[in-house]
Amino acid sequence: MSEIKADPRLAAVEERLGHRFRDPGLLRDALTHPSLAAGPGRRRTRGGASPYERLEFLGDRVVGLAVAEMLWRRFPNEPEGDLSRRFTALVSQEPMAEIAQELDLGSALILCAGTEKDNGRSNPSILSDACEAVIGAVFADAGFDTARALVERLWSSRIDREAEPPRDAKTALQEWAQGRGLPLPCYEVLAQEGPSHAPTFRVRVSVERTGDAEAEGTSKRNAERAAAEILLSLITSKEENA
Image 1 (cartoon, rainbow, N blue to C red):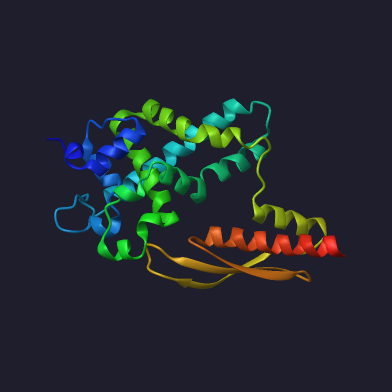
Image 2 (tube, one colour):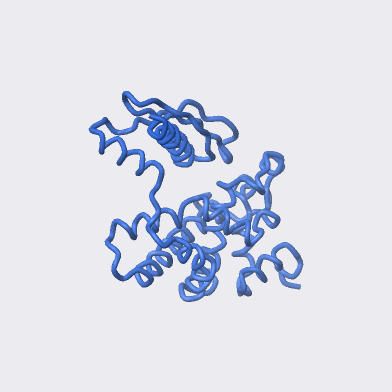
């Protein structure tokens, strides 16, 4: 019996991906969190690297190239700046984690007891990394054409739903400040809590003579974006009531 047939969780992921692995070990590696990868019997490279992290690295590049090509073909008249904003929004942690949830990767993750206890199966950062690792595994198993077809299937609806290039909250806040001759927004990390594999950041953003706002996120970038959104909302509310 193959490794995937012996594990119904892996078989279910394979079915949702629409790809049957020639090397089942690649899918298992892509779903084995590095906190567990160092355990007895787990595969590691000669240099001690986790196969999960290596597949995550590979998958990040595969997704990037595939999404960039999709945008280049879908929007032939858009300038580089607009394409870049679309690209950044599509390959950020949030859509990666959403896709991982659609594929139900969380239920198939192989985690250590500590990560399991810390709700690792629903942690956006872990889900995002697992999504990249699984796509890296598909590329390693079957090549770019197969991986690109998977990315196109998973990302097409997300590309189609944005008629206009999205504006990141941090970019919008920066443009608001520049438009009024104010210094650029200042971001400050107030705290970092939780385990290293699932940290929580608290960030404050401030704009001179305007105010500040604080927010939390599973990465510094997410916390900064959330804080910028809150401050923009406060600014908008003040301007509407002025």
